[in-house]
Amino acid sequence: MLIFEAYYREIILRIKAFIFSSLLLLSCPLVYGQTMIDLTFRFFDSGKKSNKLFPDEFLKIDSVQLDVVINRRLNNLYEFGYLAAYHQVGKSSGEEVSIDFITGEVFKMANLSQGNVADEILNKVGFNPLGFNNRPYAHQNVVKMMNSILDYAENHGYPFASIRLDSIEIQNNELSAWINYQSGPLIVFDDLKISGYNKVKTKYLLAHLGIYKGKPYEEQLIKEIPNKINLLTFVDMAEPPEIIISEGKCEVLLNLKQNKVSHLDGILGVLPNQKEGKSLLITGQLNLDLKNLFSSGKRLALEWQSYDAQSQLLDVLYFHPNLFRMPINIQGEFNLLKQDTTFINRELGIELSLLSKHSNLIGFRTEFISSRLISTSGLEGITELPENTDYNMNYYGLNYQVNRLNNISFPTQGFAVKANVSVGQKKIIKNPAFDDGLYNGVNLNSLQFKLYGELDKYWGIYKNIILRTRIHGGYINGDHLFQSDLFRIGGLRTLRGFTENQFYTSGFGIANIEFRATFSEETYFMVFYDQSVIGEEVDKKSTIQYPFGAGAGFSFNTTAGIFNFIFAMGKSVNQPFGINHSKIHFGYISRF
Image (cartoon, rainbow, N blue to C red; front, top):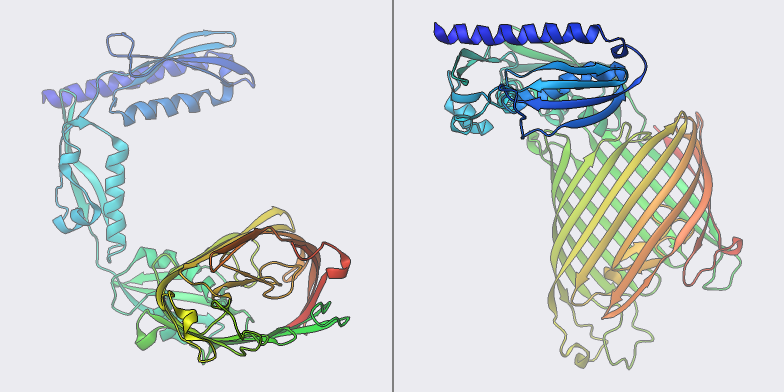
């Protein structure tokens, strides 16, 4: 009984102090005036001796913020275990106010019992009751612990769980309590209903969202529905998802609308032909991208480029989601690169990926690369291996992607991150046209690794003005790097103002900045600047340069398709900055 009497006396004392100080503050007109005041905070223990843990504070604030600042300091004291702390006005004259905080004694947590919380839950959230005992009571840590238990419950089938401290006792400034946890009824996922655009198979969408019939309810999966739908690109939500919980079952209702993102587009490039002395060189590019094949999220993409007089590139990609109805995606890629009459690369890539609960993509990737010389003409009598030769390469690596763009097709806000790290073994193959002596001292089997990263960020500057910033770079290292190993930089997607794949590099970094004035979706005018640093290391010969490009362009969206035009000029060691070396790109995109 004495315990509770002491507890209530302490509470009454704090209430009286609060009322007294409030009346004093109300009698001071500057508290409600729009004036600046000099504020002093002093801290005393219960014996009116200075509390040396908290030095005096001197602030200059607007008078209307006084109550807010005082309450903030009180909350800080509570967090340090001074549960009986209160304040009073020490001095108030003109534009000077002094507030005294009486901290009292530190309350300790004598004993915090796990109560009726199962050991399994406590182990999962990392709660150790001994970590709270015989220490100053830290309310924030207690709340954090209880929220962790609730988060665990909400993600393991119990969205209506509740938790509180029970049987609270205070004796000699020591607090004891136990945790009262009520799980509520078990809830399981039942069904997914789609309205609006319904050309998406329910089984596919359930697997993509990670929701399966009979699976215990997970709050995190519900929160991630908008992000995961946004990743699909070919659909969007017409309104937020609706959740219906009844009789232990959870039903998810989605109202979807179609996004026309499958497209066929081509770009025609007109630029000076410096190699053959002709006035113009016509380059081209064709893209075919089919998404949501068979209403099941599958994708087939084909890209062809002719970026030089005798050079071509072909990319083919097939994406198959939810392999064997599991949350695993498989992607196959084939790449063919013919570089004039020098070499031809063939690459086959296979990637298995998993979409996490937080909508991040984690993938394991393997690549098989075969590089062969097209011709050995002009290499007769060489005394060392040329910059290109025959080899096979097997890469194994990890991919990680985060996408928080508000619209993948035409983003205006948000960011996206990509990262890849790969390591592999290269096997150099002896070319019968070369003398075997060229391979003496050459390690025919060696390790090689590759890094690539990208950060793309969109900023809403003012109304219809958008700033896009992008940083991306890569690095390759190995005992013997050939030209056909290297990154190929330049052109519309990487460094504008230069021909496609103009630079071959073992390491590069590119920063793009682009201002867009938008008039409607996919209709905008833009100016840009691209700055790069490009290094090259082939057979221990290193070079570095800083090419840049600048220009302007526009994109115009019509019912027939999207027309775009870009004018760019670039400067490098071998290319002066001028109209004569400018690049013009224009193209057409038809979406369906």
